[in-house]
Length: 345
Image (cartoon, rainbow, N blue to C red; front, top):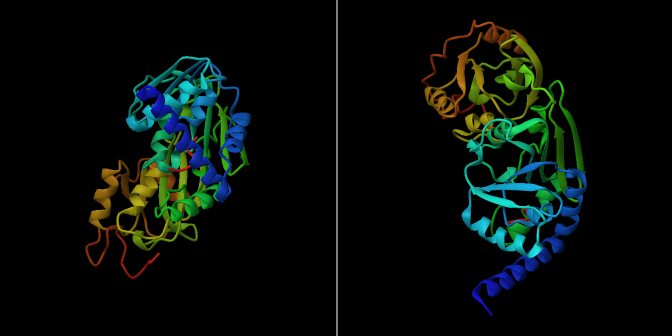
């Protein structure tokens, strides 16, 4: 028996053992995969998969698609995937690419379908990846985004605790990502089942300015007005706006994760924020926001969300806050204010 045959047998045994463990805790990989395919298909034309993983979803997708390019940053995972996919005998050509999904190496409108399954909870900045997926999707193309449901994440939390580890999760599921698609011309559907959550979206046939130039403004708030101390904020309001038309498109409150130094800038970037309007904030927090690519602007104390967003869109908020220097942590707030390998398909 050749070395490649031995490795293939070992790989099958390992995957079989993992799937048996998942079933023991309540996650059926085969049923999950069948559910995802039922909701995702058809995936026409040239399909881009973000997150090859071990190739479970790719092996099945290869039986239905015409042409697939699959991308992962982990060469080791793709080597395992190639073995698994070969055994499944796909009907279509598959190209394997090692690259960072935050900077996809293709021109705008390159793919007819773009899909990602059980990958986003592993990403450091998933909103950046989604925006790249949307960039390379052709007009009229199909986007499929799938990850575990709340119950699915609970199951994998238990599995990883059993194995002595931890498992990342999406704090708000797919809700924040679906927000990007609430624009004219987009058709979206959401499904839940078999411990999965799926977002299926079809892009408009003709791109619109609203799809291309939207920005998200983050504002720390209390009862709909600017909170005086950023680090003590227990709620943020995200304003999606069209800067070219100076128009507010949507406003929604979000609850931040528990406080930790330096966390809020990264978390807000994951929510898609381009700008933050603040009152009191520390110099270190300003520096972290700039590092994350988020503009920091000073807002008028106790102003409403609508007034602040309108002022920014009108070009009246151009200055960074001076920055507080007394007893502020990395989030820029007074410390006493706020103490506030799994079943990858």
